[in-house]
Length: 106
Image (cartoon, rainbow, N blue to C red; front, side):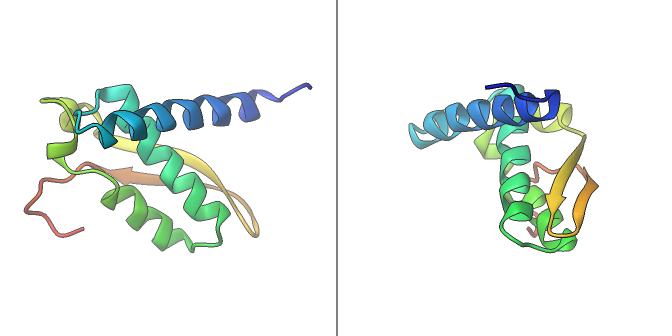
């Protein structure tokens, strides 16, 4: 099987997101790559599932809170920019500060 660079990147994100889900289910806090992969994977899946642009952005903002990640990780993930496949084609989405504090509205 031959995969394009985009397909390989998507599989890498998925794999890292699955690892993050496993660690999160154990009650462990996520590091930077795990947190980023989980946010990106949830956004990809929402777009693939037919969500609107605004809904996918909401997913990116509601996937994690600061209590889910190691200290300092929320500040490291300042902006997330990802290209997602929607029903009408690929679009770039940008989410500022996707890891919110527990007191913030989703």
